Amino acid sequence: MLLYPNCKINLGLRVVRKREDGYHDLETVFVPIYGLHDELEVTPSDTFSFVQEGLSVDCKPEDNLIIKCYQSFANKYKQVGKVAIRFKKTIPFGAGLGGGSSDAAHMAIAINELFGLGLTKQQLVEEVRPLGADCPFFIYNTPCYAEGIGDILTPIDLDLKGKRIVMIKPDEGVSTKEAYCGIVPNPHPFDRKTNDFEKTVFPHHPIIAEIKKRLLDAGAYYASMTGSGSTVFGLFDNDAEGRSDARLRVLKQEFASMVLLDDTFGEWKA
Figure 1 (cartoon, rainbow, N blue to C red):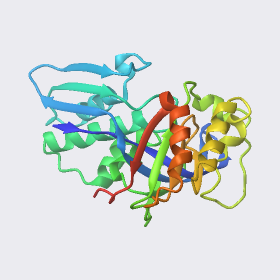
Figure 2: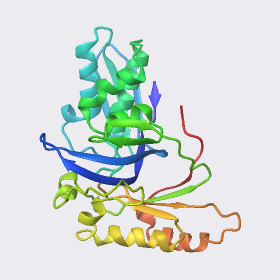
Figure 3: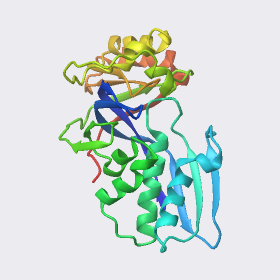
């Protein structure tokens, strides 16, 4: 079975409060980006194997969320047999794109289908919830308003069909710990235009702030850092006459090595 674990962006992100368990409650809108994805092939096998290609993963194999997901299901459901996993990593780390969470969620989807577990989406959400805060979103994989630590989800209507998205990631990454350092929970009402992490990240990573400014200068009607960074995206109206294309072409040439995606939104997948 071959799957393509995609990434996500955040439209706005508010840090609401710090919890007693050390996590923070958030408000955000998750939007799936299908055009930037990893590749995950899972095949029933007589022996367990895991082969990784593409970008290196900065963790021990046993800490990889794909393997943790498999082990969780294998320990709980006797129907789950051994598998051969081939994994190609494309979504970068420290980018605010949720790649690892997406990999785990798609592994759960694969196991559910390959071994006929018959779990519903809500049951899959509960299975992957312990693996990471963003994992439940990738089970739904359609636009959602998120609360809690990002795991309480409400699907929303969001029409971006025909809009163009350009995603740029500088060479430097931002760890979640770094992004939260100095963050002050804010009681202001949730605003899709504001990502609270920009306040703590931009002073230490001026290139990220510069990319956002340049996307807006190039004609984006909306630009933001996604998650805790370091990726910045811009949303553009596709202009049949190409009136903003010249500025955007210059920007893409200047940041050519950093451009992750230039794509147009289609219909959301079921």
